[in-house]
Image (cartoon, rainbow, N blue to C red; front, side, top):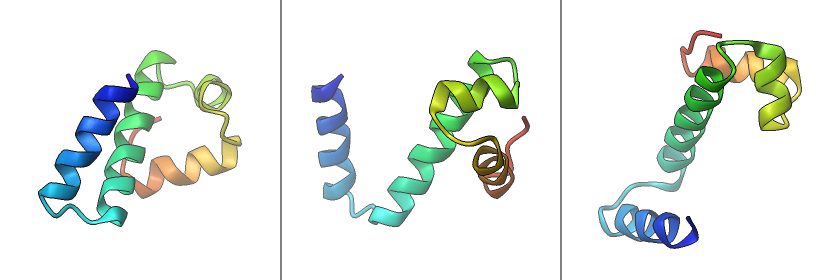
Length: 67
């Protein structure tokens, strides 16, 4: 996984993706996957991701995701 991530980051930098955009996109996709794996359960998703439920709820809203 480390090599895949390193390759992806290198590609993003080469293509001029800004840091803030990369972080937002990663966070959105990370949360999407975690929500799917927990069938949309905020409690289980919070435990899986290590985020506090309130933080997770705020981030879900920020990204326009459904919990």
